[in-house]
Image 1 (cartoon, rainbow, N blue to C red):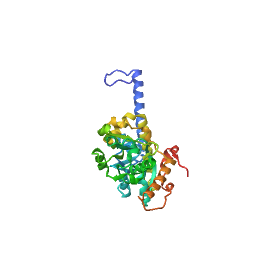
Image 2 (cartoon, rainbow, N blue to C red):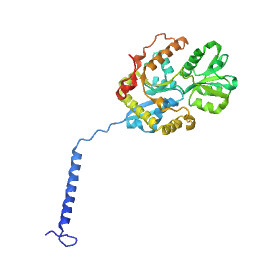
Image 3 (tube, rainbow, N blue to C red):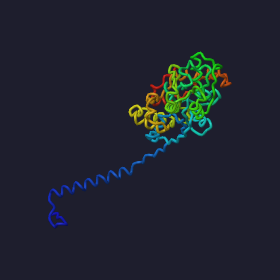
Image 4 (tube, helix red, strand yellow):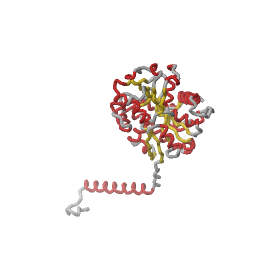
Amino acid sequence: MIRNPRAGRPWSLRQRILGAIAVGIALALLAALAWRSSQPKAAVVAALPLTLALPIQVASGAFFVAEQRQLFPQHGLGVQTQRYALGKQALAAVIEGQADMAVVADTPYVLAIAKGKQIGVVSTVFSSRKTAALLVRVDHGVRTAADLRGRRIGTVFGTNAQYFLDKLLEHQGIDAAEVSIVDYAPAALLTAMRDGEVDAITTWHPELARLQQELGTKATALFEQDLFVYRFLLVGKVEFIDSHPQEVQRLVAALLDSQQYMTDQPLDARQTVAAAISLPPELLASFFEPFDYGLSLDQSLLLALDDQTRWAHQRQIVTNRAKPNYLDYLRPQALQAVRPSAISIIR
């Protein structure tokens, strides 16, 4: 007879059954632990490092959201970001070897290619018709683009703002000799507009939104949506893109997740972008559109690059007369792997 050593009484049948179950469970756990310890341990995959140069502009919104939502490490990337006022400064960081990849507008990209730089395009990351505009001083008597003759206009040379201005003047039939176009640094451009030193400027959000709020009824924005698309690209040296396919593909995947989050949670995404560019969310609300952050490589990009190349030659901004084949600079592999439907290039 089995006795309970504590009570000195025989164990009941129920107690014996429970004891056997407990012993069985303990043996099963020990066996499971022994089996697990005998299995080869999975290798810990280190995050792949990547340095991104970003302009502090609306166009970098998907990157800001990805950073805030920790999407880069979720996709196996250890991303460091550098901030610049302009996309062309971010591109310069790549050219000078200070960053791996950058976000830049199409115009500085075209000018870099014309100078012989081997910079590849992974994807368009932002495309909008209501982010850049001609801001005119109504109190100076300028209400439409047709009123620009004889006026002083500020812009930033070597950027899409200059290209936009030339396209607008051409559309209005205004010769460059009929206006005074002044090249400003970005901060000086805004000051010139505030102080009334110029009659109009080509600028973009968030600076555009700030100036509109400051100047009130003294100024109005002309977007000329049929003339110009404010387009930003994800670029890197061709050599880097070709030799780091995993990093580029993971980056593209993270951006697609970011864009999806911006679509699903636009209010939260707007707050994130507003904080990143130091703009009150209520000002960003007037032009923030998650759809603008869709990734793509399409025919409109090639047409825009070709048109800007012709413009740069006509304006004698570049001296290299050779016309590049931009297909040679496209690197669609990452986008093809993650979202093939986003590619519609005719080769």
